[in-house]
Structures are given as structure tokens and as C-alpha cells.
Length: 197
Image (cartoon, rainbow, N blue to C red):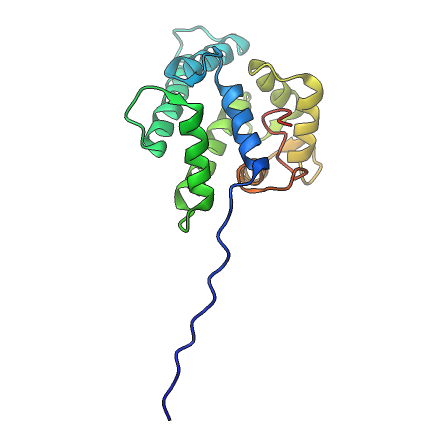
């Protein structure tokens, strides 16, 4: 009696939803500090400079230089992830990258991007370096991106899943994961970069 091979049904392919597209478009606008329709090194370095000023650091101090270096590296890594040889990133490139990653059968690049970005954001927000982000630290950071205090409070409460008045590194990763991967308009983490609707 011959054996018949059974094939496992393929899991349905992920689709980049309109909700995800809107969130990613919103994040592009948040990061495009000079509002010229492109992400460029200066957008990231200028955020670093604002953080240095907010922390009252001397621009020539080691801490200030490290913040600026990390901000620039985040942009360089983004260009590498997107596989873009140019020194700028258009909205089309940005949306196409996230669409391709969400719909890919191999989710590795997006998951690495989420973890790396989460670490970077966490390091920037955690101004007193206690490995937790307080409500004040979160609000202060979002003002750099011109996000209102009211929305910052909502975003903080969404991310603080255990209601201990702090955001842990794990909560930040979970929030970013929802932001990029969830099509649910009410997913916790959707307001991490402000109001996107």
C-alpha cells in the first residue's frame, strides 16, 4: 500500500492594510523634521541636537556627541535596511519598504528593524538612564517631534501595559510591533508617534 504525502496548507499571506499605510505615512511626516518630503541625515541629526539642548548638555561633551552619532547611525541603518544607495528617502521608498516587509514570507528584516528602532528610541527617551521611561520623559521626547501633550499622555498609557507609570524596553518593543504589524485601528502602540488618523 503506497503512502500519500500530505502537504500543509500555506498560511494566508499578510496584507499591508490601509491602516498600516496611514500609520507609516504619519511616521514619515513625524521624522521629516524640515518638511521637505524626504528623510535625510539632517532630519535625524537635528532631532539629536534638540535632545542635547533639552538635556542641557554642552554640544562638545562626550554625551552630546554620542547622541548625535546614534541619531546619524539610525538614518544610515535605515538606508541599509531599505537598500537605498541615495542619501535621502522619499515617502514612496518608505511606504514600499514597510509594505514589502509586512507582505514578505520572511519577516526577519522588519522584526530586526522594530527591535533596533525600539532600542534606539528607548535610549533617547530614557534621559536619566534608569532603564525605564517615565511619563515626563516620554512627554518631553515627543515635544521634540511637535506632538501635543494630550496625545503623548494617551500614547504613554497605551504603552504602559502593566500600569506601573513607566515604560519598559519590552513594552516599547510590543508597542512598536503593534504600530507596524497590526491593522487594528485601536491596537496598543498606535499612538506611539502621535495621532495618525
